[in-house]
Amino acid sequence: LESSGRTTRDFAEEHWSSEIKSYVMPEPPKFIQVIKAFRVLATDTLTLVVEVQSDPPAIFEWFCNDRPIQQNRRKFKARHGINITTLTVEGPEQGVYKCTARNPVGISTTYGYVTVNGTTLF
Image (tube, rainbow, N blue to C red):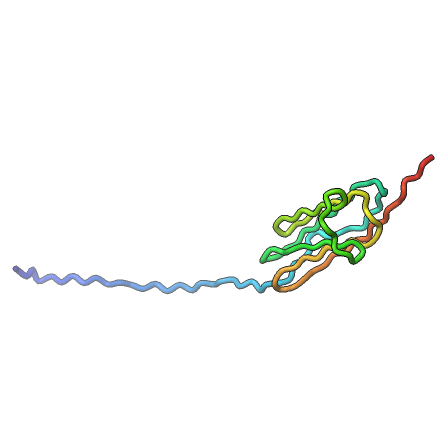
């Protein structure tokens, strides 16, 4: 073994970086699209669409005149997506339609009044 008289040194550098992480406070659902007032005929099909901003995604429930709407293929059809819901009503009932959106942080509600006009025969 011969010594050449040279020395090699390896240096490792540590790099520090500052990361800014955003923190979003959980909030109750916030309505983007609400129920509007409608005037319909008793024979019409009424479709109500509601959309919320919510993380985690909202769970929806529909009401008519403060009664929970039960799924009924002939009268009521509710379809739920991620933060959006649609209620289709065959032969709508007059009154207040309400939708609640719930997540672990809270509940938000939207209301709309539906006026039903009877059919007039001439």
